[in-house]
Structure formats: structure tokens, C-alpha cells
Image 1 (cartoon, each protein chain N blue to C red):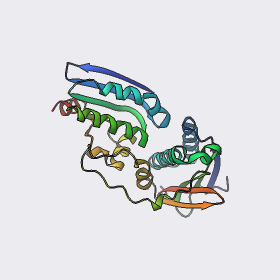
Image 2: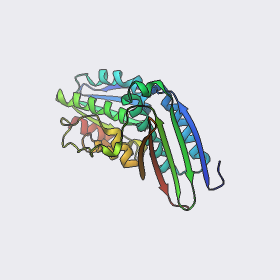
Image 3: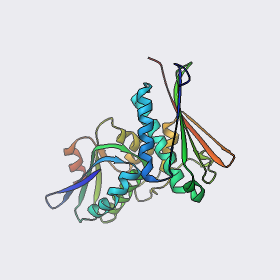
Image 4: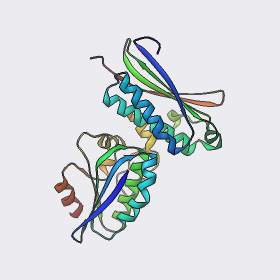
Length: 114
Length: 147
């Protein structure tokens, strides 16, 4: 399980998570995710293309993060691998309708900054 | 093993978040060994995670004090299916008694709770619950067509 970030210019933060966002994995990266989305960048892209399993506890962490970003006037989007288990979880819970998901890096960055 | 068209196995974990991956590994290894298709295995794994997380998080003291037992059954005759029964000593909880979660219209209105049950309902083709001798028995299953 790992989480890292990269700031792209002054307006965009890209957060990359890999591994399993199950109980154990979310517990290990959840606090860091909250800390990273608190940065005052306008857009945040959370790259989940390296996440192999997304449980409800992981979705919960993503919702809390997206709400925190929205509350400070920013926008958080998700970058996912097409047809992955992550997409299956997001679609089944309807969260893809609330936090935009993209399979293209470029589209995700553009949407986060729109 | 109960014959070529039926397989069953049992496993148990302590009621702790750190144990859930062992349960997932047990499930995946058995599903692979018995040719459960990847899509059905993914759905079953998500249901198992959510069922265990629910017991660990909301089951109370009795749940925490006893192992959580699981039974996997794979059947190929007459229809292909894989079912998991999770047996725990926690507070009685019937998932079918919980109303469907209403999807919020905006992110601001979204409450992050209750998604585990949504996932179990969406991903299972079969969902049964009974409370017997102080234990919850939650069974969820997936089906597929024989190739």
C-alpha cells in the first residue's frame, strides 16, 4: 500500500494511491490522504489506476476527501483503469455520479482545473 | 470436497480488521482452484469484505470475542454458483430489514455510511439471512453459466 503526491504547477495536485483500499489499506493511507487534499490547490486528481481492490471504507475516504476539496472551492476527480474492479465499486455505489472519474490522465487534469 | 460438482471449505478469522485479508486470500485461492470466473470472484470478494467489515465495525462485544466463521460452497450442477456464509456472534442484523439507500443528488448531501450494504446487494445474486442459536448466518452468492 502506498500513497504519494506531485504538485503540477501551482493549481493542481496529483495524488497516487496503489495497493488495496480495504480495511487495512485504507487505515494505512487514510490520514495521509486527508492531509494531502488539504493543500490549497484548485484541482486534485486522485490516481487510483494502481488500486486493485476498492471497498466501501475506501470509498468513504474518497467521499470525505472530495467533500473537503469542494468545501474549500476546489474540485477532486478520480483517474481509474477502464473496466477495473475500482470502477465496478464506484459504479455500484453511484459514487461515479458524484466524483467524476476518468481513464485519461489529460482529461482528469483538465476536469480538475475546470 | 463433496464430489466433482460440489466443493465446500471452511475458514475462520479473529474479528479484527487486520484479519480480513487472510479471509480474502482464502476465498480467492479456493475460487481459483475451482474455476470460479474472475468477475464472479471479484463480486464475491467484495461481498465478503463488506460482510466482515460490518461484523467487525458494528457487531459489538460479542462479535469481537468470538471467531468469525466462513463457509464457501461451489456448485456446478445444475447451475454454476459460489456462495459464502459468514457466521458471527455479534448483534443480530438482518440486511434485508434495512431500507434501500437513497442516492444523494450532490456530493455535499452525501453521507459516506451505508455503502457496504449497497455493495453486498448489488454484487450478490443471492442473499439470505437467519439468526440461529445466537449466531448470525449471512449467505451471499453469485451465479454464472457453464461454458
